[in-house]
Image 1 (cartoon, rainbow, N blue to C red):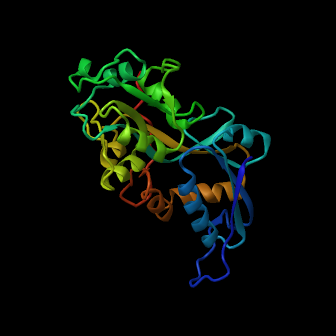
Image 2: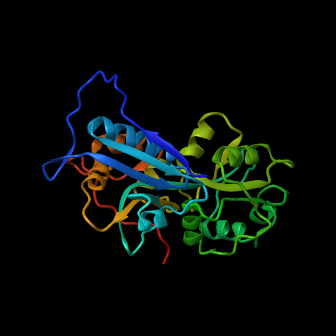
Image 3: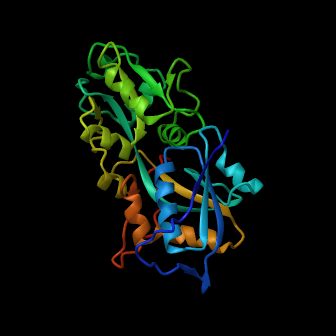
Length: 288
């Protein structure tokens, strides 16, 4: 059953915030946002802040691991889909980058990997870490669910769509995937891919995992933002092409300084221009 999360503005507000306007109109009504990935906490935060700026606007979030957000927008069940790929029939606006980290056990002494090596690991061609100069243990692949945006982006960038072995263990929740890598027996063997913000939080929190540099580039927010770390995916908001003030207002809020500050807590915000407004960003990270 789809988990419905209704985020409403509380009555006890200690400060007054001017309503956001689009084309001179006060924003009002209910906005339904659908998704199925790890972005839900971010979308909740953006929705709460958006409602505070627009007291007559309400946000209803439909989030389920097995849902199809883009189809929900097309059918009218939602006004915005949170996704990682564009859809020809819908407008798509990028609001952030999400780096994709390659995570191994802390004791795995692999110093770095190349893009080609990661592709060979996750396509099952490399079966032992020692083949790459690592420990004498078999590679244990931890895959992510097929309907997740991060999996699509990971496969497409590496050129291994449909090639991850069926024998790979599939784990949905990020925290469970991290615990599996940290506690797998025998040690040193597990590897997975995960959103960079979540991965960095695990490392800074003392979890026994580490992130592998890719093509001699460290997985960090600055390298994701400027494109040096190329294993990344865009975080997109998709809606129908017809003009809709409440959709336009929410997208504008996500791209505003306040929205980008919220995004920066878990994801990589867009590159800022000298005026403080996000620049238009193109995805130069995709392989030809």
